[in-house]
Image 1 (cartoon, helix red, strand yellow):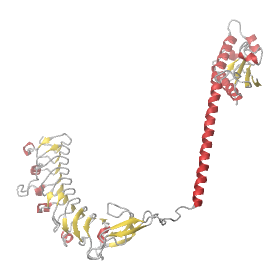
Image 2 (image 1 turned 180 degrees about the vertical axis):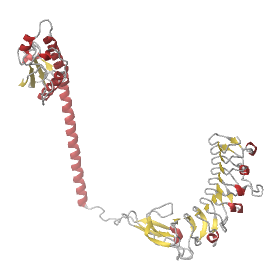
Image 3 (image 1 turned 60 degrees about the vertical axis):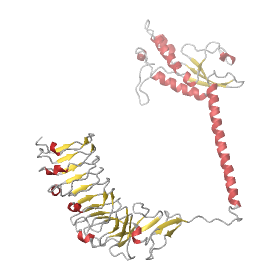
Image 4 (image 1 turned 135 degrees about the horizontal axis):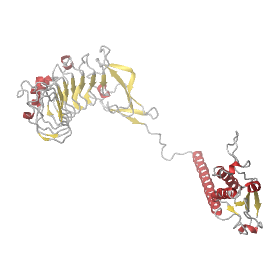
Length: 478
């Protein structure tokens, strides 16, 4: 444990306080992470007495005791490296080189003990009082937004704080008066959502940027539907500056009303103050012209056009609906009729017959080697292939003296020939194609494929030859 340099205890639901005696012998400890626990009491600032310690991360806890006073911790504050105690319940204050106490419940004014801090982050607290003096000439980052600060800034604040780089006092509506001339080293400056304003309309330390304008931007307090000019730090500054400035600071000079370039609007200003300056601005959208009572509010020809268009549109919708319903009913009736044998239930009907035959079947029967039964097996394969797809196309095989003999006498499946009946020619042709595919993919006897009439043939058009079935299709009316 004597060589331990980094100790991480975050996210363990630790409760209570941290006594310094537990860690007083860790001479090599440089960093401790105790964030996201439930620790209370005072943060363990005594850790900075350790010779190597330089970083304490204690955010998102429940520390509720004030930080130690400079008089009680002589020599500690000057050795502090970096401390993060954000999101706690610390009611007091302290002084460190780098200190983040944002999102706490700090009250009162900013004490002088913060003078040693280089980066001071105190936003989202309840600090009050004024900034008549800056905490220190060494302060480089000062974040004070979302507090309850009041009064004016000191006239020489920026002249004294020559090292100040980032300064944020936004969302402190109690701060008034103009902003003193900035130090040439300032990099970020945010005074939006304050009551600060220039004493005169002549802003000496800002220059108007004619190349860019603020559009609707609630962060800067630009009124809705308004476009306001942008201001920058003068060219004497040698580096870009991030400037957040509400248009109320320059009394809305140069602001215009425009709702996306489509709706006309006019500015409505709050009555001027004692100096004749406007302290608020709103954009009021102009309403369309309303005719006086008794006047014609709607032209007759517009009513006729609307009426004719409505009737036409209704007619188109009804026609499309009728066509769609008719198609659905016809399709349903067709499918229902195909569930019965073709020709039944109608006085006049069209029946499509398909007659098949195996090419050279007599020659193949005569060739069939005795005792092998090659043609019997091949004929069984042939019959199964033709019957397998018949029902998918609503086809019926004609046998004996069945229902079909009302129209045709003595038609039946004989030998290797088939007579099939269909409701429509399209179903008959589709079945013929499906039957040919079934025959092509059938597992024929190998002995059969040795006969010249059935042996495989390779060419550019086909890669296999199977027993050929001539097909004749006839349509008969009954």
